[in-house]
Image 1 (tube, helix red, strand yellow):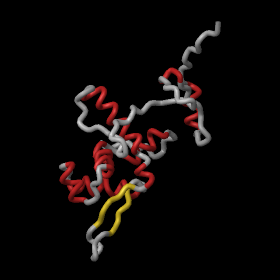
Image 2 (cartoon, helix red, strand yellow):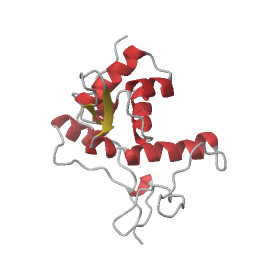
Image 3 (cartoon, helix red, strand yellow):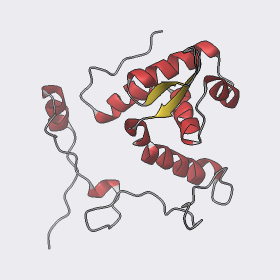
Image 4 (tube, one colour):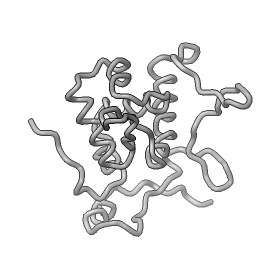
Length: 169
């Protein structure tokens, strides 16, 4: 069965998934954040088949998440480095790691911990916050059409169930 494409969906999550693709892609990006740059090092770290790794690296380069840098005299040695667009995935990877630490491994059993280089202190957990810095839960959010909303997005938002608004005293 062919994988569904999300390229025509007017949705930020769908577009991110279209660019990122699958779990191998996120693991390649994770390794790039850990400093892995060469094809053979990605392959050794992940245990991924060459053809799949080639496909995922090409996809990440095509989407501008990684750049392929020629580091050989003959053009046969390349490194893959995160672009600013790739660096922008740091919050996503951090959120995935934090979720897994809390819900898969459990507190006190985290495989890796991110600490601030300058202080050595663990980072505070990522949270959705309002402009004043107060943490918000999902029931405190409202999703509204953005400036790039398509007709389909407007229709989808119009037909969603409305949450009950708190009563005023």
